[in-house]
Amino acid sequence: MTLWAKRDDMIVHEREPFNAEPPRSVLGERRLTPIEVFYARNHGPIPRIHPDTWRLELDGLLSAPATFSLGRLQAGFEHHDLVATLQCAGNRRAGLLAVRDIPGEAPWGPGAISTARWTGVSLADVLAEAGLRPDAAHIAFTGADVSPSARPPQPFGGSIPVPKATAGDVLLAWAMNGEPLPRVHGGPVRLVVPGYVGARSVKWVHRVTAQDRPSDNYFQSRSYRLLPADADPELAAPGEGLQLGPVAVNGDILQPEDGATVPAGRTRVSGYAYGGHKRGIARVDVSLDDGRTWRQADLGPEPGPWEWRHWNSTLDLPAGEQTITARAWDSAAASQPERPESLWNPGGYVNNSWGRVHITVTSPTGGAW
Ligand SMILES: Nc1nc2c(c(=O)[nH]1)N[C@H]1C(S)=C(S)[C@@H](COP(=O)(O)O)O[C@H]1N2
Ligand SMILES: [Mo]
Image: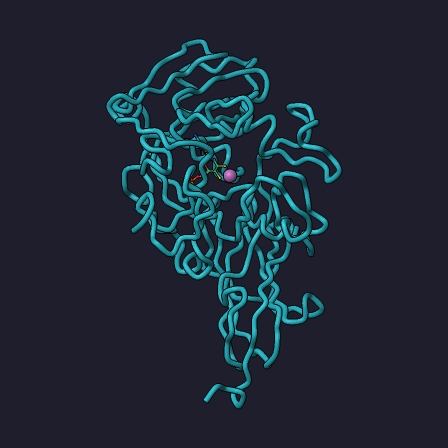
């Protein structure tokens, strides 16, 4: 155990603020990601808030603004369990960095995605009690952490449109995989916005505001937006570009590890695929000739609506330098784009290009004895 009770094989991009992802091999093992290897993405110092003193303020376009303690929240509303995948918009940024530099952004591999069972109350229920007014179009969240990387420095925040906030699947969550929500993951209480980029699942949430426009928080209006490839992020006006919300199909290979040396012959290849917002995973294909020919992988059991899906295939690997490629198809028959070159953007977000690992396959006779 090292930082924040994470396993010591985590790939730590930054210690302060703490940013870390699990290695590929760890993610493929199960449906729920154990907390000790769940990726962590932070933009500032992690606040310490006692559950007894935590309060949630609801304000803005509401007929009955209110303040909730954790006890009142837990006593006042029905509890829900939801298995949901969280994926950072920067997941797999390393593939974009290989195309062109993205100054100041961490080179996340394919591990900025994890899945947990979250327990909490439905944001829709809480908003209904607070009397959401018809002129409210967005629900904004504010966290208790102050990010020095924001300009100007400010608490982390963001917003989601009212239809998503009131759909019933967004949780104010206090538990993760059956344990009290750990501090590093937003404890005592965080948002879980399934199907949206991780940035909207605001941790250490203490304020929920109903308003007529998206949040003007730095992390909504400046960061976590998709700018065109030729835009200058310093010059682009706040709110310009596509503010990231719903996630599209993505996936990658988890086994074998990129750069691994494996013996020739039958080898198990496995990975994850995530359909994103309201889409399931319908098929996964794997290729040994960078997409000229494909074969279908075996899909894991049909998951819940907000979960990733694991897949595997056994490939007969010939000796030599090999590239294994994988692409997922979602339930709307959309698939992952072929190359990161076609996706490059100044923030290095949403790289959902084909999964690729380069490996060395040794022939049985070429062994080192
Ligand atoms: N208050 C707050 N909430 C936050 C963040 C943050 O830095 N501060 N990071 C966001 C981002 S970008 C992601 S991807 C997820 C990561 O959640 P995790 O650290 O529990 O994996 O939290 C989101 N919520
Ligand atoms: Mo993120």
